[in-house]
Length: 84
Image (cartoon, rainbow, N blue to C red; front, side, top):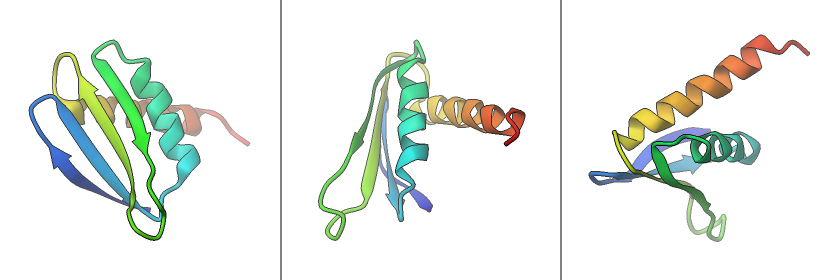
């Protein structure tokens, strides 16, 4: 899965995903929506042959990329602490 910044402004960020891993991105959205600094986190899914799946994040305070990094770390810690 390749991730790239599709669009960025002051309080919002849109990340694009090539060959998206939907369960992982869905987990990211759930963690982001639990963050008090985040006002909106949602997946934007268009036709898979026309557009990449994107994640849109808008924050109330702070930087949107920082919120994504916090959520990513939380997910990584969860999976590294749980053995199969």
